[in-house]
Amino acid sequence: MQEQSPKINSLDAKDKAWSGRFNEPVAELVKRYTASVDFDKRLAEFDIQGSIAHARMLGKQDIISKEDVTAIEKGLNEIRQEIRSGTFEWLLDLEDVHLNIEKRLTDKIGDAGKRLHTGRSRNDQVATDVRLWLRSVVDDVIAGIRKLQGSILELAEQHVDTVMPGFTHLQVAQPVTFGHHLLAYFEMLQRDAERFADARKRINRLPLGAAALAGTSYPIDREFVAKELGFDEVCRNSLDAVSDRDFAIEFTAAAALVMTHLSRFSEELILWSSPRFGFIDIADRFCTGSSIMPQKKNPDVPELVRGKTGRVNGHLVALLTLMKGQPLAYNKDNQEDKEPLFDTADTLLVTLEIYADMLRGIKVDKTNMRNAAMEGFATATDLADYLVKKGTPFRDAHEAVALAVRYAVQQNCDLADLPLQELQKFSAQISDDVFGVLTLEGSLASRNHIGGTAPAQVKKAIAYAKQQLK
Image (tube, rainbow, N blue to C red; front, side, top):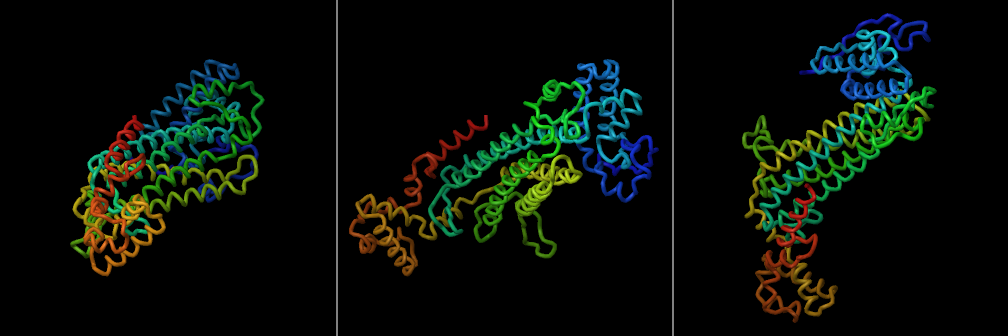
């Protein structure tokens, strides 16, 4: 169901959470400018979760009565169902998700609802809600990364010995296998998953109990609330707990790295799918046509991934800039953390999902890949290594092969096409066993070590990667 914009209703002065201090109502324009309910209502489930844990703690500590706790918990569960069913009325006058839920609770259960806010502030409440929400998002992100890694492994396993050119400076460098190339992105994503898992440890600390900034005079039990909500520990300083958003920045930084990795991958998919390369074909369901050119098949999904990376990177800069000038403790600036954070999470999750599906629809043209690997003297380094193994110093071998390549360019042929007698003009060390070195398969097979592109090593790397996903 599409979310509706909050209805604008006027409230009596007594219904405002801070009405006693002011002589005039907040201007309508200011209400709209300062309200966050339009976007922070997505925190509602987590706000209720945190409020129930807080109420249970208040009851346990005899700060409120057991009867109040029962009424609060019942009322909040009913409100949760209203929100899920879409019947909850969000009020702009109530500014944010917290006051909307609190007002509805008070309407339902009376004074018991007014006691819920004892011993807490919206400052520690919102910090708790965001951490609860973000903790859940991190779990979804890691699951999305794992799914994408699975798609990469499926494709890599099909192309353990499919030869393609490896590039540096986008120039043909040395032959590699397509499977080996794909595993590079598996490794990037593996580090990304580790970053999120590590960030989750710092997200999973409870701010509730810090109140507005200095803690509270009520005899609260923060460890009890932490246990109720599944937090690993509590935030140890009340000022820091309510005012900092480094956990959100850290999440966004990790998200920006994932998007950057996928943007690099997207750039290659775009290049490889063009007729000039012809390495791959992306399934039609991930492409679009042209409104004027009937022959076009545009790789829109990888292009958008590349574009949305700038969006996520921008959110990271926005959050860093948001925090850079804030004195302790909480400031209204921090309301601006949610939209970039929410959009980062949404963008990242859908990108991971669509990428995992897209890779399963890729078809590979092995012939075009192999033909491309035959261009650009991809086995020149192998010839230099061959000479070194025959006793030639590497710098001399490098010079001899460079001269041989220049000659082959003039003859319009590959090194492997030069007759033995001509190759021997560049080094007396060359004998008829050189042609085994100059083949693509020979080049691949020679790099038979951990991290190398030899098909035998690629198989081992895939097996190891599968173990990491378990």
